[in-house]
Length: 128
Image (cartoon, rainbow, N blue to C red; front, top):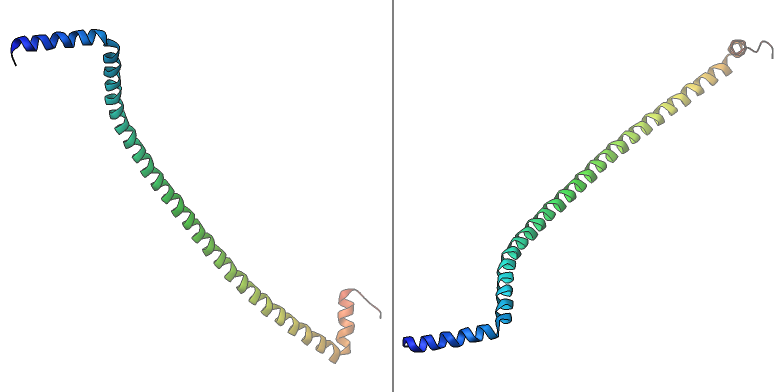
C-alpha cells in the first residue's frame, strides 16, 4: 500500500470514529470491564476453591469428633454395664448368704427355746 492510500483509509476511519464515538466508548468500557472482571473472577474462583476445601476439612473434623464421641460413649456404657452386672452378682451372693444366715439363726432359735426368751429380752420384750 502506498502512503496516499494509508492516509485516505486513516481519514475514513477518523470520520467513522467521530460518527460512532458512542459505540467506541461502550466497546472500550465493556472490554475494560471484561478484562477486570476476568481477573477478579479468577480470584473469586480461587476463593471458592479454598472455601470448599476448608468446608471439606471442617466436615471431616466434625465427623471424626462425632465418631470419637460415639466410641467413648459406647466404651463408658460397656464399662457401666459390666460394673452393674458385677454389682448384681455381688448382691445376689450377699442376699443368698444373708438368707442362709437367717435360716441358720431361725433353726438355732427353734432348737433352743431359752435363746428365744433371751432374744426377746434383748429387743425389749420382757414377758410373752
